[in-house]
Image (cartoon, rainbow, N blue to C red):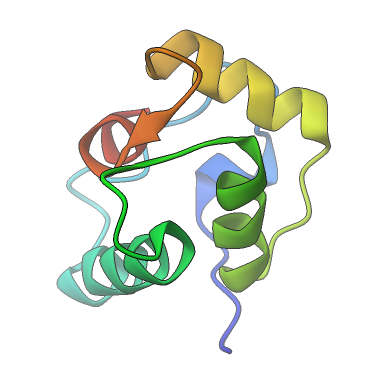
Length: 88
């Protein structure tokens, strides 16, 4: 798996920078979608464990509390959808 050095993963605890800004190219969007589908295994949203899988798939190793913070701020019901993740 190729690593993904997107700004959001560099400083996850610093207000979660936007992944899908205009600077993010189509390849990045496709990589995020592919990773989300891999981690979700057919589900519409990711919980903490699946979000961790996605981040590792993207070559990142955030702390569990950072992932939980992302779900709390941008998700709902303890999960985060692909759309919520992309806009995080």
